[in-house]
Length: 88
Image (tube, rainbow, N blue to C red; front, side, top):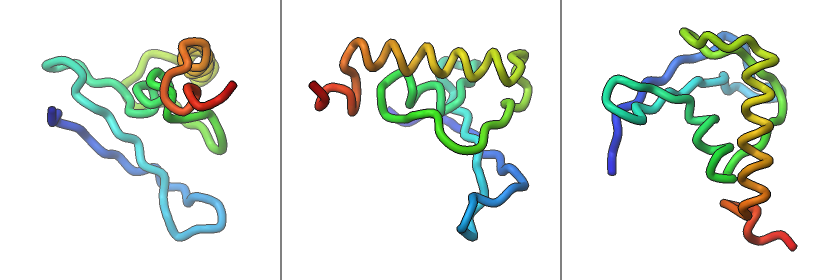
């Protein structure tokens, strides 16, 4: 199903590239937005790598947010979700 989303840019270039970072928020429930990075980590289709940034309008500080992403990634790996299903 399709869901509304918002894209914001970070005014910093991706290293060795002409691209910029983007922050994508997906409407998870009516009126409730969640970071696409959170969803990808939870489903096992992302990893933490490179530059990090706090999310706009998010009460979590950077350390709390990184710890949450790590927890989501560990849970996905334990459940063999996403790319983790192909590893022994």
